[in-house]
Image: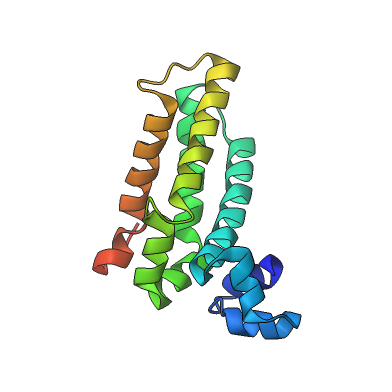
Amino acid sequence: MLDAARRRFLEGERVDVRAIAAELGLGRATIYRWFGSREQLVGEVLMAEAESLFRVARTRARGRGAERLLDTFDRINRALAASVPLRTFLEAERDTALRIITSSAGPVQPRAVAAVALLIEEEVVKSGYQPPVEPATLAYAIVRLAEAFIYNDAVVGIRGD
């Protein structure tokens, strides 16, 4: 089910529960029973993509401590900003996309914050980095700041770098 939803997302298609259910020979109720809602299903797809992106960015990042974290976050943010499927989703379903991605009650933001906090905590252990505030608080600030820049164009129609 996640593979079918992921394929649709990456191809720039709408993640349509009815179409996925038909493709897999399942009832829509089964998908809703497993995921609760379409938004949760899309959130799972987005987080699977984000987790892969985080792994690649972390592996390729250079430096130690704050420098390595900055390089990691820069790679993540640039990849998100350049993602054609993500941009397509934001353009086609702006309100839903923003709710799924940026809401603290949504399926993405809390997990993104937790993933960033884990990156910070790993750097504390590996290099002795001393964050200026608790890792969870710093992670929340980093995610919210990234959202403000990456998704700003979706909110107000601004295009640019």
